[in-house]
Image (cartoon, rainbow, N blue to C red):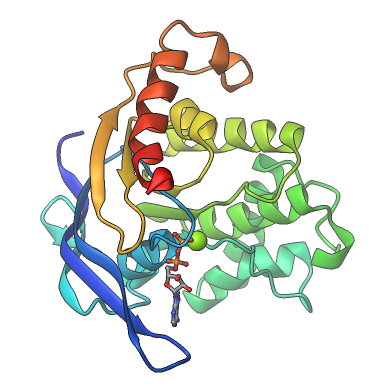
Length: 258
Ligand SMILES: Nc1ncnc2c1ncn2[C@@H]1O[C@H](COP(=O)(O)OP(=O)(O)O)[C@@H](O)[C@H]1O
Ligand SMILES: [Mg+2]
């Protein structure tokens, strides 16, 4: 568990704004996600969370700093990283099963195995019977399940998720949290998760990093010492829950006031 899986060191990034000015978005961010850890980043809107995950995924090159994604001593290839972006990004012209098979096609798996593995994952995420539906024929929660299946189907070593449940209703959200926790527990993936929901962060994570306002820095990383497996439905009843929530909220609030 103490082996590093994602090592982000002294990252800084800036963008050019539409008016042509430079805007610092991340400043000296260092994060280490350990192997098999559920690591979450919270922070105020616009502080650079998505930018950080884009950098962690390898899609975006930081202006300064280094990124490593590891399995033991080996550096992972891009195809071994799973990235579930904020909007599910399903292919609208593909059915559920075609969407889920896509990464396997890219990896050139034989047709039979593609179909088998896609069917397995469609079942795991509870979309059996919807194989031939198009994304537009699914609810938001079902689309999210499809996106999760499409990523998990190639068994990534590292799973990056950017506010995956942000747009879902409260009931669907908790159900999805349970799905993700169960999968994480069974598959033993290393997870880097982004949310602005402190209850979600506490319910899911081993550690939570709190970011400052832009330019985003890591203010502090807090351990979440709640027992596993966790009951996401009743997490707020736990004795330490309120304390943890207070601690995180205080760290966030420092920025919201200024
Ligand atoms: N490609 C881009 N070009 C210019 N500005 C960007 C780009 N992507 C993000 N930004 C800006 O960088 C800041 C941080 O964005 P983002 O990482 O999406 O924040 P968060 O996910 O924490 O809400 C925002 O002000 C956003 O407008
Ligand atoms: Mg974002």
